Image (cartoon, rainbow, N blue to C red; front, side, top):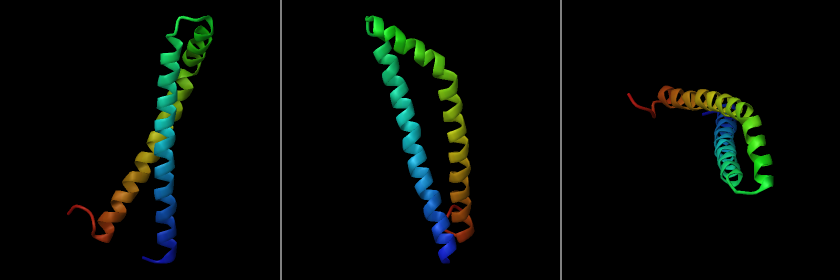
Length: 88
């Protein structure tokens, strides 16, 4: 594998790693906010209202991230098939 292809693969793998952790972090934070919003306190209603207000934006961001990650994972799979390391 030449240097350019190796650099491209390294960047793709780093993107996949960081994007996966970003998606997991967003889901965990959203779930934590939902649990905090169930607390019987006046400030919890503010958090609940904010989660409801941002639910569409959070969902859209996760769907876009999942689409890009899926394309990247597919490219990685095809790279392995072309190199001969994948399923036959």
